[in-house]
Length: 358
Image 1 (cartoon, rainbow, N blue to C red):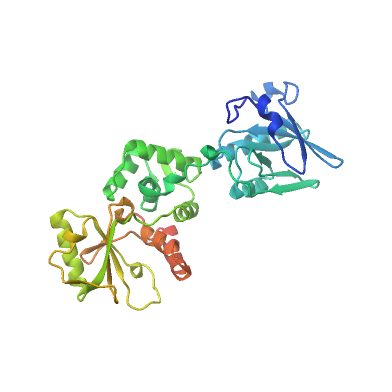
Image 2 (cartoon, one colour; image 1 turned 45 degrees about the vertical axis):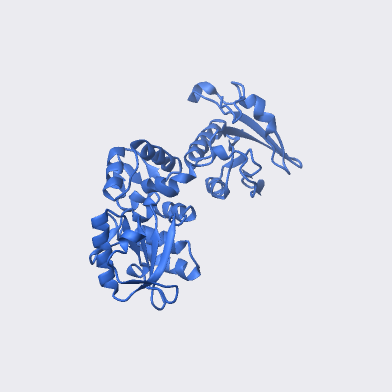
């Protein structure tokens, strides 16, 4: 018997499931409802739905989590219950929350589902189709771990656009460290569990990226620009010489350094581009550099930041370091319409492995 979110049993929570305009009643099944001995377990609930003169019964698998992985498991179990009943019951899942993606998955699987937040789909082919969405998640603790796609923890997700598969958690950590990231084994393990629950990563044999497009979407939707503590705009007259001097200063003073120039990856229809230079110390970076601070037609913007995400997997070219293709994509995808359109070329290249393991 599955425990509800409050810790009570299904018997205590069975009467709380409602789905207007349908009339819903539920009971905890006995041994005779679906033969337990044939599969070793039984549905959590038997749900009866009434609409006008129609009445339909459902064998329900109830879960205390709302992750995509949990949903897939629940769909499979509900189908098995329904198959065993030989037409007596339809399959249904009950979860704390069913968002739009989860509801669409249920439609494609032709399985009904109701959440405890007021969303759901009740489907009986040829007889009934009721779809409700838009209610907020009343159980946010049951939502997927979102911070695996944001901040320092997102380095675990990002590293899969360097390599698609790893033999072990240790190798994931080693690759992140090699690419300039700093994290711990425990953080990597927790992040991988979150990615696995979201069906982004599979762990059968090796640790492998399963859904690159979905991972890009999640990284983009959760993206926040690097945390900047100080910004200076200005001009350098000789950009190649200035970049080489920046690199020399970064090595001498042990500074973090990376530049962001999207035109290295895509063609942007613009006039002179302002190059963003991220560093851990603007003052030390500018030593012996011919730089004039000005807000009038600047071609360099210096940003002081210790945010790991912008420096992670930087790429060296022509004696300078540039942000990774993934970081360039995320930055463009979070800006205006023109930048978002330009970002699609980088997205295509990322998905086609053009930048993998370089």
